[in-house]
Length: 100
Image 1 (cartoon, rainbow, N blue to C red):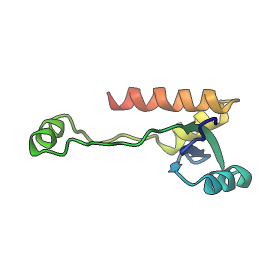
Image 2: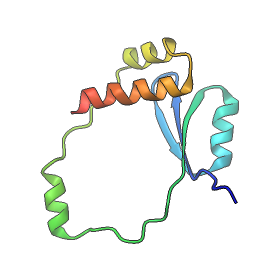
Image 3: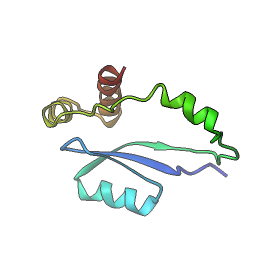
């Protein structure tokens, strides 16, 4: 049996990014034309998560304010991209550039 996606990523024309684990909702987004489904993920269950105080303190050192796309940046990417894959890769690269 082929695995089915369990998480979908969609990007709206205004730059909003949505995730869902509901295949029906992902399908509705796609049908509406308001969103581009740019990625579906195949995930595995998580069996253990390190939530010790030591781990929390260590990861807190690396936190910073998330910088998203401006409306102008999102619109520029949307308008200048022909394929969903290219849009997803360009959004990913732009966000990486702004947040590293």
